[in-house]
Image (cartoon, rainbow, N blue to C red; front, side, top):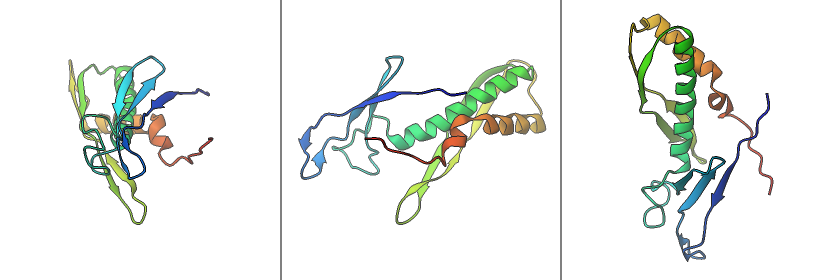
Length: 149
């Protein structure tokens, strides 16, 4: 299976670029037309040069892992004849490392409600393990990144 996924990132200079006092706000546009405001994390670049209301790459990375896991989990639960009513995850990514920081861990904390009988603890653990095993994003986080300017 081979697929290409695209995103268009748009940024325009606002502020004093040479001094580093410029806006990091930008827009992510996806193939379906959805636009999402993006920015550097305010933990990395303080406001007003970052947009605290926008999604930063670290948050997007965390959300992508959580979302991929959830989508596989829901499908696997359905296949196992369990009916999910809601799924919520407050995922947490932790950055560390020196001298080059990197996201070292991502913890998922899914809470699922069921419309009928819920899986037992062992079945639930099996569903989450299977979802993790199938998540494309989880398998990609150690990927080699290549830049083609």
